[in-house]
Length: 94
Image 1 (cartoon, rainbow, N blue to C red):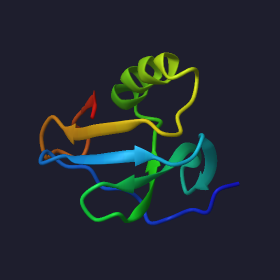
Image 2 (tube, helix red, strand yellow):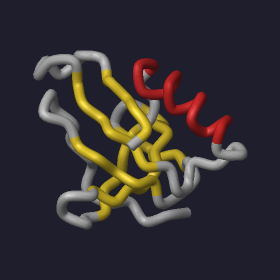
Image 3 (cartoon, rainbow, N blue to C red):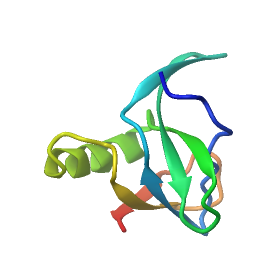
């Protein structure tokens, strides 16, 4: 299983990441959660990105399907629709 890193924080300003791993699950305080490790383009830091949010999972699934079923190697531009913690994600291929 990949090593868990500090979690990726996404806000309305956005971030560009490259997915480094295939999905795995993490046992959190709220139960199991799907995640991948990513590299943040701006800083080259590795982070853990939780991928369970519906607004992230749906567009990500389309990108994975177009990438021969693989998460690894996808480069994404991510941002939140607003700075609200529960705001939906805006996901584009970078």
